[in-house]
Image (cartoon, rainbow, N blue to C red; front, side):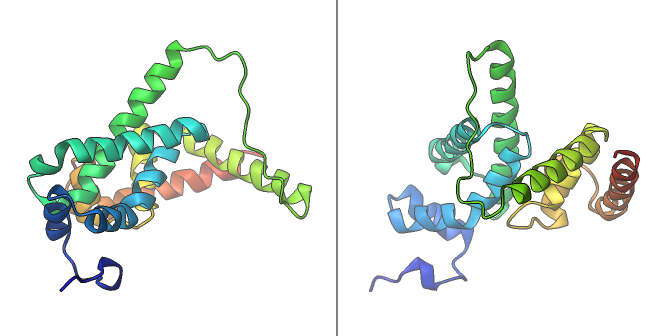
Length: 187
């Protein structure tokens, strides 16, 4: 009897990894569906352009394919993917620092009802990113992880940033307060 993974939310990550390693396209698709937003949110947190972010995201999934048989604790796959996404993003940033593009074309949203809305949203995003850049690297990383989609639990975040789980909440609160002050200080 073949069971569709889409209707089974209780299938464990361990089982999915095992089946994906065995060649199951359904298992692989379910893994991607479960974790694609997490990978994408971490990659985009590094402010890579759209094409580079897509390349890095694909590389993360390629790394998973290459290491399917070597994942020691499948139930911690979210942490493994987050760490891999971070490492691949940093690799892409280092590579782009050595490259000098002739021209950069940004994706334009042609379907905006009011072009002013897009400008306001872009200004707000830029203001937030500028305020975020005033924070230390550890605060930026913690805030990105706590805002990941799908959400990561504190245990996974603690493993990724190598901190005690009990320090995540208080540190997050301090980082958010610094971000709020930075936002208030910028026009």
